Image (tube, rainbow, N blue to C red; front, side, top):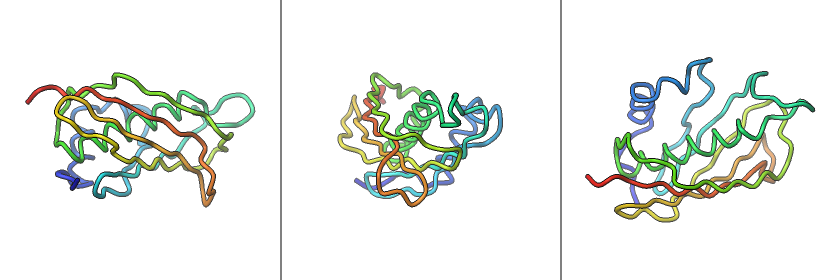
Length: 141
């Protein structure tokens, strides 16, 4: 499954259609688009922390959701109305205030549904910080 949008095209689309994701500063950046996959970097700020100086669950959920959406865009084109129908996340380790990388793999890309697996890591860690499976509804063309 080959991408139909480039990294720059996805960034331009997100900037135009979803400017609110950068409302408090740009913290998300796509670093790689590849067949059946995509990687997004998240540069968390103090506002993304919870007590204990660890990145909050909602911040990691946001990363998994936006990265999975970007992976779908990369492979179906600019579809603003594709929506999350479910996202199941497993928090595995406490991440510190440092960049996170969300690696997405497209498991299924049908006419109406897409299923994406995401694995979030930090630094050179081999062990994931969290893992999520997301399902999106794709509107008819």
